[in-house]
Amino acid sequence: MVPASVGFQCPECVRAGQAGTRAPKGGGLRSAGRRWGTVTLSLIAVNVAMYVITAISAAIVGNNPLTANYQSPVFDELLQRGDLVDAGQWWRLVTAAFLHIGPVHLVLNMLALLIFGSELERQLGRWRYLAVYFVSILGGAAAVQMFSLSPVAGASTGIWGLMGAFAVLMVASKQDLRGIGTLLAMNLLISVVVPGISLIGHIGGLVGGVLATTVLVLARRNRMLQAVGTAVLALVLVVLALAVSTVVVL
Image (spheres, rainbow, N blue to C red):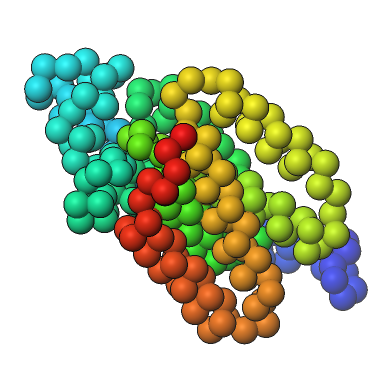
C-alpha cells in the first residue's frame, strides 16, 4: 500500500490517478517569464531590438554595425542631447535609455537589469516595478539636462534606480545595508574612473529610484496613492528636464 494524505491507497490506484493527470508544462516563454519576470524580459527585449535597429541603420550608411552602431541616423534621432531636448524633442529623455554603444555596453547593462530587475519585479509587482524603472530613467535624464552638456545613452540610469530601490526596501525591512552599500560605492568609483560614463546620469537615476520606491513604501496601503505619487514624481522630473537645463555645467 502507498501512504496518502488520508489513509492509504493501493499502488494500482496511484498509477491510475497519475495516468489521468497532465504533467505541468515547463520551459518556453511562460517559464522564463515566471523565473525572470515578464516586465524585465520585455525591457531586455526592447533594448536588444533597439541595438539591432541601430546596427542595421549604421550598416546602411556604411559604418560597422557591430562596433559603430552609434554612428547611425536612428541613434542620432534617439539619444539624449541637451540642446535638442530644449528644442522640443522631449522623447529623447526616455528613448536614450534604450540605446547602447557597442555590444559590451549592451551585455553588461542587460545582465545587471536581469539580476536586479527580476528580483524587484517579484518584490514590487509588475506595475510598481515598471514605475520605479521609468522614474529612474527620468531622474537620470533630468540630472543630465540640468548639470551636463554631454550626449548620453544607455540603460544605466534605470539600473542605478533599481539599486536605489533595493536600498529603500532594505531600510524599510530593517535589513543589513552593507552589501548594497558596497555595490553602490564600487559602481560610483567605476563611474568616476572610467571615461565616457555619465556620473551625473547615474546619480540622477539613483535619486529617482530612491524617491519612487519611497513613495511606494510610504503609501503601501493605498494603491491609488502609490499611482498618483509616482505619476506626480515623473511629471516633476519631466518639467525639470524641459524647463531647467544646464544650470551648472560640469
